[in-house]
Length: 189
Image 1 (cartoon, rainbow, N blue to C red):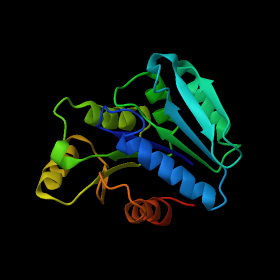
Image 2 (image 1 turned 30 degrees about the horizontal axis):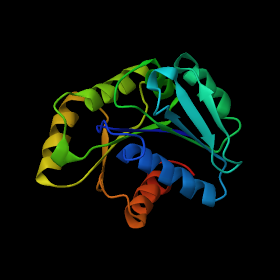
Image 3 (image 1 turned 180 degrees about the horizontal axis):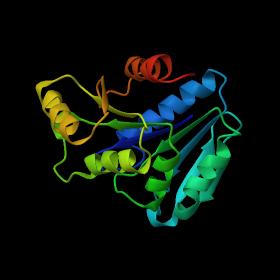
Image 4 (image 1 turned 135 degrees about the vertical axis):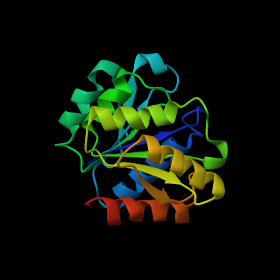
């Protein structure tokens, strides 16, 4: 299964919520005996492309050109149980290629910091157009701000589902709850 995870934050890969969630889920899946590939945009040279790290089979990191990300993900499906892709905030050819291959797209939204630039909402809309029927899931808290964001997104993006979990907590309990929701309820293991 290819799971893409996007965040509205424009921070570095080391502190980005989506990167932390992608890495945490990848590690948990690897500990469960799964062969996992973690794919993310090169943090030092985003224009240079993407990096792929095999989690269970060793720490092999290799470069992938943005134009080749879709083909690479399609080929990797036969070698890996799970592929987690950390999408960059901005929409580009690599992100579109990853979304076109995805089996599930997760968007982590910190409602209290919801950005007005619309990048994350644009990525959600792009995903629904690139791959109609792709399950889109927004991770958002159940606060008043979260309810407002859910209402706004529901009105503009059909079929969007919501997981009422904090998008900002990255402790073991929160990641465990997300893991259970994704692999226990939303998706097949």
